[in-house]
Image (cartoon, rainbow, N blue to C red):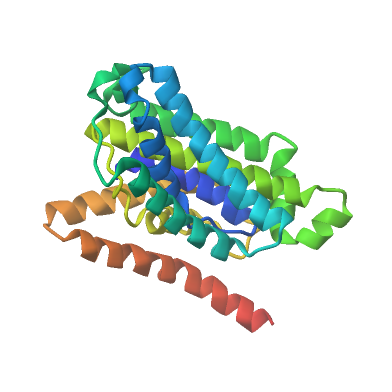
Amino acid sequence: MSVAAVGIVAYGMTLVVISGEIDLAVAGTAVLSAIVGATLLDTGSPVLVIGATLLTGLAIGLVNGVLTAFIGIPSLIVTLAMLGISRAVANIISRGQASYPDSVSAYLWFGNGMLLGLPTPIALLLSIGAVMVVLTRFTTFGPALFATGGNTKAAVLSGIRARSVKLSVFMICGVLAATGGMIESARLSYINPAAFAGLELEALAITVLGGAALAGGSGSILGTLLAALIIGVVNNLLNQLGVSLYTQRVVTALVILAVVLPGYKRRQIAK
């Protein structure tokens, strides 16, 4: 996937990780959202196609959030199950066949157009990042998010609606995963039910490289943006060197281990 698409998905992952949870369903969310949007391509209406895509992402995020925050099922289990369900449903709906959104030019603009003098994917990466920075730094939601991830029980005792906070970040993550999937599908002019394999690993690598702790309570949108750019440069370099996709995924996994391991050791020593 392009740096912009993965970076946007990583924004949502960052919010979820800060809250002390994890969303492994982002790849399934991106795929199913794109496929649901593709079912409306024949209408020729960009509003219906784009609206259905984003609403599907929102709905998946809502389900993940309710099951995690209100039912109490660990997010690792919920989102891993949702990853499989979403991919299966996407293949059922599409019958395993790809779709081509060439008839909806407004859809293709998300991947190949221009906005404010920049390619649309880059402009969206920066603008959505700016919105996320404002949300986490300059609104009451930000402190509530970090407090929830740092110590949920203490946050609840201080009057923070921790369940609502967690529900919100899963919903935001769902919408951003759908947005990333739409951008990549539009860039390729190709909506594939088997797409985005390994997206959750890439988004998680960017999140932890950007400074978010998997234990929750810390993280930075600006750090995530910088990490997305670094990962993008590394992947481009590996591509130019002729390194296979599978080897690149090994490198991505090693990045996660290299970033997480020192923090884990420090926590073990502190205990």
